Length: 297
Image (cartoon, rainbow, N blue to C red; front, side, top):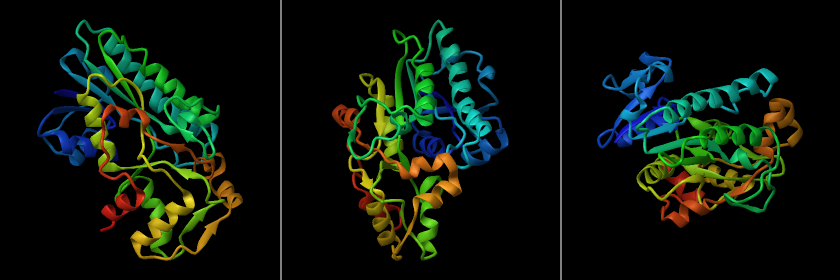
């Protein structure tokens, strides 16, 4: 396939390209061409913006993974706007290109997150669960709504409601593991909140699965089939690192340190990949112990 991708220099995008580049050709949209070529290789075809795509019809598929990291900074009004615009604007531009084409790409895979559901407590969450209205839901709902404005008669749309992606280098785990490596790791808040996670390998393999399966459309939870509580995750992480798990961070400390964005860590979601499993995807790392053991072996 000839694939157009945004977010190609990020953790997920770069891993996906490296895995599939022998089989497919990629064109990456990136504002920093030098960084893109350094990350992905000098042979990589890079465009500076969606506007530089002259004919989107030459691509078989479009994969849209671009977006400002959601948890790197406090959620001030300005930062919320940056988070939203970095997702909504480029998706709007891609959809406009696709809908204006006489021969559009057959597949459009667009990012989202399990933040779509908002806080859900301990109940099991599937793609059919009604969301709790809050910032992450509003962000993802509009992001998905823009993506699904694509003319579905010509282009299949699949939405990636992604959980916490686990990888040794980059992503959330790198930050989560640091206190444990220093010997001061532990659970956050009550520790009873659920963490819905996915190993980077399964994230990339699932995208490939959706890319190749024409019957797959609509939203898919990209999370492992066995979410765990924060307390259990902390114990498993400590075990994988051969470090103690003796401490805990009270909720009020998290709220002072992170502000509103602390809700992502203190209010969990017990999300399962119902549609992905029913479609026939088989997870390489279905349990958090297998995922962490593979990362820190």
